[in-house]
Length: 151
Image (cartoon, rainbow, N blue to C red):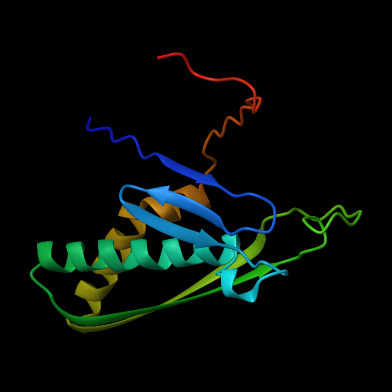
């Protein structure tokens, strides 16, 4: 079994942009009502963007492995979400997406059977899709701002 640990770190101060660092990349997240220059996609848009990016990466990898000529790949995703819960309104609705619909348009030289096999493998191997479809244990830990690590 090959295991990889993925770490990200994000922070912000009041009236500043929330910025996540992943590897050597900075990802800006969310709107800033007091400064439009600090506006970026919402966390839920990034979730769907991550899913689309994963489908693209796995789709390209699988096409190469199957010796299929994938010329281009378009992935459109539509998520339906009720925003009441995260806005603090009393509701029995969940905070997450009610449904996610994915539209994959490959420009690929493949028969119908090859295309069906390709899509099946993409769905099986996409880690972001796997995390959306199946329950993943999540452990949230609260750390006081006054605690520090000792070196």
